[in-house]
Length: 399
Image (cartoon, rainbow, N blue to C red; front, side):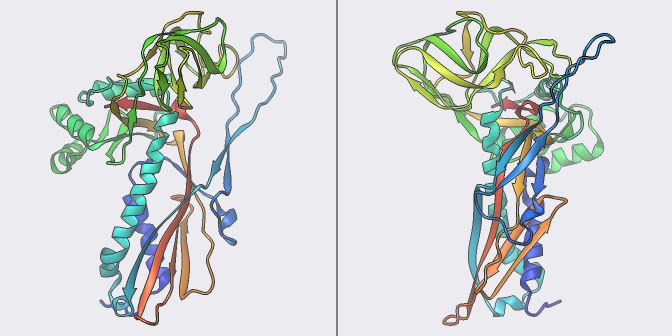
C-alpha cells in the first residue's frame, strides 16, 4: 500500500532497523549507548567511561589480610562520525517504505555498517593471543578447540563466544567440517549459505572486513637485554644492525616466559604471547619495545609465571614483510562499540534521531530542501567509538 509523504521519523527508524541487521563483527560485541547525550546530542571527541571489575587475591588462614581495592576504568572516545549522503525528489517520498528502503536506505546503511565493522576489526592489533599457522588458511576443527582453549585459559566465560572469519577461512572451515556431526539446521546453513553457524562453542560468522596484518622487516637473533624486566616495555638486543622494524600488532614470545590463568594464577604451560603496541624502527641492533600485556609476575594482576631471563630468545610470529589475515575469536566483552545521539541541527527541512538502548545503536538523519531542483538532500550519520576493554578475552586466528 502506498504511503504518501513518508516522515523523517519513519525513515530514521527504518535506517536503525537495517543497521542492526547488517552489522557483522559489531553484532557480537558489547555495545553501549550513552543516553547522557540524548537531549543535547553528542559531538565527535566526547567520551564514555567503562568501569572494569575489581580483581582480588585469596588469603590463607584466620588472620585478616586486607587488600587495597583498585578500581579501573577505560575511556572510550567517540572519535568516528561517518555519514552517507544522497538526494531524492518529493515524488519519491510517495513510495511505500519497503521500496524507499530498498532504493535508498538499505544501500546507504549497509555501507555504514561495513565501515563500523572495518574500524572495529582493527582492534586485532590489541590482541596478543593467537592460534593457527601464519600463512595457512584455517581448515580444521582444531582451530575452534585451540581458540576455545586460549579463551578458557584467560578466564573467558563459556557463553557469548564468537568467531569472525574472512571469506577464505569461512569457506575452508565450512568445507572441512561438513562431514562432522551437526544439527540439521546447522548443516542446512552450511549447505545453502556456505556458513558455519554454531560449532565448537562459538557463534561463527563471516565478515569481508577482517583485517590483514603486515609483518615488518627484521633479522638477527633478538634477545632480552637485561634480567628481571617487568612492565609494559622490553629492552632487547641482538637484532641485525639497521634492520629492526616491528609493526604495531606484531606478536612474539620470550623463551621461558609462560602465560598464567587470571583466576588461579597458575602457569598454563604455554608461552605467553605479547603484542607490539607501538610501531618501532631502530638502526642500532637494539630496541625497546612497547608491549601488551604488561609483564607482571606477582599479585592479583599476574600475567606471566616468571620474568624473562637475560639473553632469553625472542621469537616473532610470521615471516617478515608478509600479509596475514587476522580472524578473531572473542567473548563479547573483549570489545566495546559505544554510540551516542548526534546533535539535531536547526534550519533544515527535517531532522530525526533513532536510538535503541537494547542494541546500543543510534542513527541520525537530516534532510534539507533544494527549491531550485525540487530535490531533498539527505544524510545518514552515526557517531561511535571502539575500545578493546578486555583483549585477554580474544584470540587471533592466523590466516
